[in-house]
Image (cartoon, rainbow, N blue to C red; front, side, top):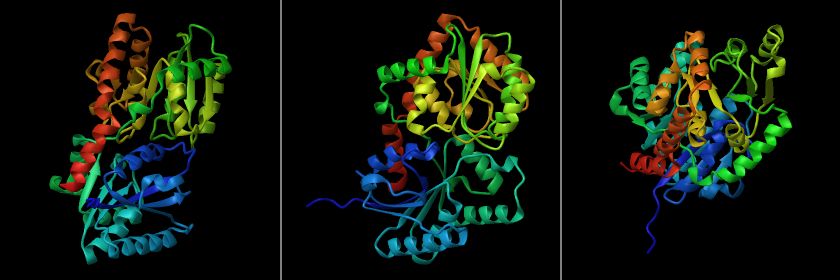
Length: 372
């Protein structure tokens, strides 16, 4: 007789086949998890995944309004609860975590809510702050990316550490075809018309102040004596300002803003880059650093969120303080002038270090966390 799989209700905020967001990397994770769990997948926005990603059931909310989505969430969670689902795992959706908590409070079960960031660094409306704090009080467990992040959430939201779980982000290393990536990156470099011998700097993120995008013109200006080209993947509220600033400092010919690129195509840009830039003012557990590690691309990053815990020892000296843009530019310069032996050593360590975050290891942690 086949043993029944444990049931898990999983909330994914958004799904699109060609998504440029980090949600797309959850697809492999869900596909693998479905081998262990009987998953009821709920997608808040977007489209229904092809073949349900191996999940037992999957639904996409139809309502466009926040009130309507809240009602739909409660309906599907209540229906799932009556059909035997007791454990609810919610990724980055306060509405999902709130709805699941109400169902569980009335009919029993557990709510695991994943969140990883530093929202306390910014002022928000009283209504939003109140709703989020209420949700944190209602959930059974907060799941976040690192030990340091768990302590910060505990301190800022008065969550007992006993109610926190650590679940690092992951990368599916088995899917990376390095030979194919090198061929694609060479083609992309030719299409971009980048001169031979030029060091390529890469920025991949939303173009917002939180992600330090407004610092990019200043960073490039401080490096104008170097033979570098800045490649920017992303879009956002700071895009037009950034373009104007590059024009003011007469460096438009040394930068290319590509816009959003589907997550599945991101790695080819890492493969053609020499240094990755993460000048964020606020972070959680940035998946882009796992991509940099997997491709052996050294990075300069601000010491925010879980960045220091993700970073291998040889790269820690290239972490800067977020309030000091001069320090960040100097870290990039040091990488640009690193000796071949030093850079080779860093790359070797990066390629070994990233295995700590391989999908297989994260799956083991996730299964232990839910089944405990």
